[in-house]
Length: 539
Image 1 (spheres, helix red, strand yellow):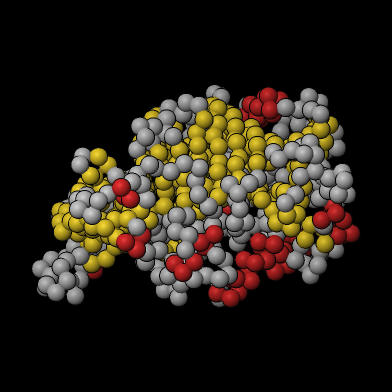
Image 2: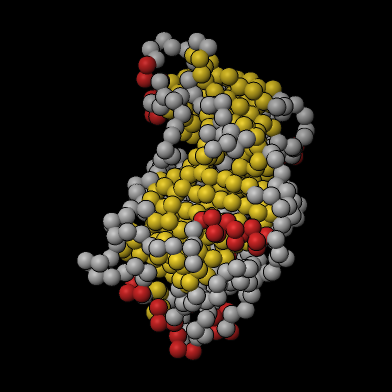
């Protein structure tokens, strides 16, 4: 796709409430049949609450899974991108819209079916404990140049998803749920970027990934002066049914409190809790696909973790040549997230999509999550419209058929995560050919340069000496150094890694800076894949 065409494509989709659709987000999930005990369209569900929804999910998991219907009217199924983006939800039909005196602080607007979104979701409003389904009406949409005629569309067509608007700016949405179990939100910079999902199943295995789907949503009507919106969702897939509650509080950092109750139909090999999905095409540490005029292209530049023991880790993201898998084993993690730490425009130079404004997303677990691992899946991509990064919590205890498993956590969407390490943070990672400038290379090695900033560096005197503590799972570490770097008001650590052999399987690296026996920084961790011997040129 031509760069200018992509910018127009992106701007159009943003007007609908999302950034450009991603490959992973476009994957369809499997269930659209009415689950047992769900009232038929138009009927109210008496006594609706989260307990009722959990009971509904449990009963759904006890019956055979039914795949969804993806049959659309031919004219809707035939919509191309330009036609689909011409569809507009009419502002005067927004849920809870009214005059200035009666409307509250939230409005909901709905997405039309078509393009990637072929399975309808059922939407309901909850008032005083009773749920009422919201019926599709072609009059809710302005069809513009889409080629559709609303009067000829079926009255029971349904919706693809919804977006949330807040009273501070009715023109811009603050969250959107669209496609499988994907959803997004924005903080004060009002820029969509990475996505979250309700659940990940078998991501990165040697078989097709399973994409659970939110089949139904319930919106609890908020009080006029409420600054919190509660949304419930029913999830279904061949392996798992689930009930979800989202408490959404817009702000400079938008906060979502999530409760999930999972009811498996069958065992799940790789369960992903609080899954995050992002894009990394290239950056300062990995320029494998850097054939673009822009210096960097990514929605997120690293995975951050705070372990149960309180250690802070930073793993820069990469765009590998093949699937790359990493697992960070832990017990009761304090938090993890995919972050966009680099927020300088001149590092991206993209005045169309503004990668420096993409939100970071931090997960704060609630309660006892036990043993497990934060897992990171990195996939190759040649296109910035394809998500290729997935991170989630994988519990050590397998999910067994017939059980109930509960998870609660908080999601923070914004420029900065709600917590940060006390020590200095990694602000840049660079790699290149190793060796000593001016001296002929006798063998091939890889150079790593890691910049740290913040923490207690300001307390160090001019004669302070920091020790770089470096470990490698294979190979020889050499030419190590650590020195002040005034440009970032921090320190730069550098080292070369000389491969021990001709192997090309990944090498695990770790680095932090220490002063008088005390760590001064978070721990930089990196997975590096040595190139084949034929590519180890000495120049």
